[in-house]
Length: 363
Image (cartoon, rainbow, N blue to C red; front, side):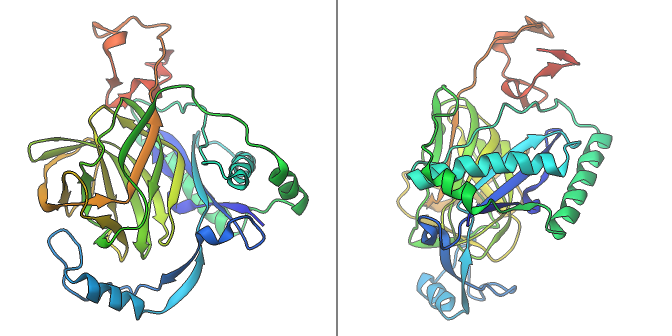
């Protein structure tokens, strides 16, 4: 039967709030269970011993595939959906689980109906600046969550009656009635593979509008991306600047993984970027993109600028993001530091749409 658990690897501090990740799973009794029941290679810690090019891709693809085929394989149940919330660190475990049950129900109803699963939160109230004491409070809360998870307290299995009722319900129309943004080439399997622990941005399908990316999709070929990040970048010549990132925690291989409840600032023309901690994961890509991919073998960081290197060939990665334009008036401010509120998109690097207060006063 379908269930969810709090994936503590995806719980972290984001702009002054506690990010909590719900990972949702199916079992054999659920519709289309086999979509995320996958046969995957058990990757050795030493990784692929063959030669890699400067961009982290195996030089000999056939040899790489042969090596993968000869590894031990196991059947693995991947999440059929993942969702984030951003909340105060004072939230209690039972409150987190109540929220998770609500989103599991909505996701399960949409899954059974064959609908795309788009789950939305109330707009998070991020902070302009996060104090060290606030960061410690969130860090301590994450430690508590890990303890609760180890004790089995952050996993919820609905009753058979509840699932039976959910399976008969029709999806409700929910979401934001705003413009739709998309960025990246889309997911799916490709014919080539690249090490996920290499920062990359893809020119394919730059962002078509300004707002917030709330949904990311990624498809890992093999291995587990232990600490995966996706975001939006700008490029000027060889200089790349990271506008914003979402951090997922671990991402399994073998099926498309979707993450909703994300919150990544995006501006028209931005390019999609991705990075994972060093490990043994490989991501799908193909050579059919209309423009080159740029990369760098170091971690992505919000606001950081660096000189990146052209990959030298055209690539199309299995990444994709969608979101919404966000607009709204200001109540208590007409100007900030002499600048009209209508002309301000960010304060101290935080998108205006993400802020509820400025210096303690509602904007």
